[in-house]
Image 1 (cartoon, rainbow, N blue to C red):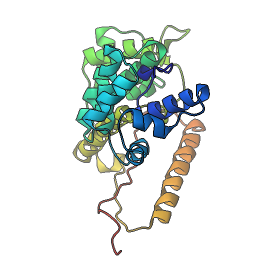
Image 2: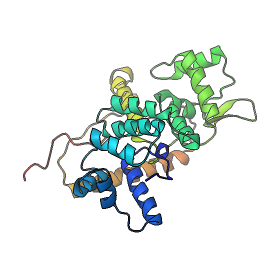
Image 3: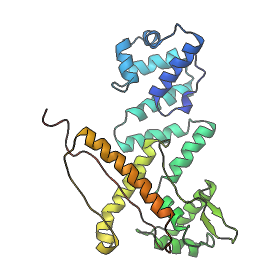
Image 4: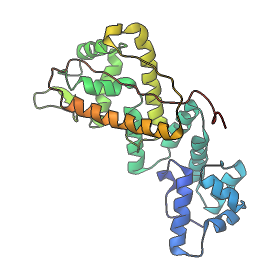
Length: 282
């Protein structure tokens, strides 16, 4: 039951297993999820729940799958890390497993994920990109990097700024302009749904921490931090989520058409999450 699809191309073992089953069915129409479940000695109903995310793979099933698919030692280790990554509930555990997986991944898949991971590894990377769209950076000298670092809130070291500029230029996020300065290659940096959640989670946690610091570090007339607690149905929650997405698009349109003098970089956090468990009242 060797597979032509590459496990190293996946960040979700359930997607891999579904794709594997479909790829085999193309060559052998009689093959099915039930047949694969039988091969790995798993109840078909239980295996279906695993594929749907209702259950997790057990250690014994991981071994059975690796054997059934004739994984190499490298592929077996990656699959073990992948299941641990998908099963992890804590951000620290997900980050650890993701970093371990990166050393196994191949070609452009590895490069894309590695680039994204580096770009969103520190909050000041995206801030620097926006800052250099309004500040003319002449070079990567110690004095210039130190000056840029002092513009950040909180302050960033000269070495970190220098390394960040080098990274962003390598990724094509920053570029050398015709006048010799270093500036942003594009207008915006957006995460998007293609980026693994473990990366965006780290990014969100860093900016959440900055928002907490801003309460004491930034004068009240220079910031807007507010909170709102309410009860709402699932239908209402969906409408609010859609409105948040719409608001983000409207905000970006406002920024794009801003005719004023750009003089500062801002970050906006939008958080919507439950603070009670279950469905109360049922």
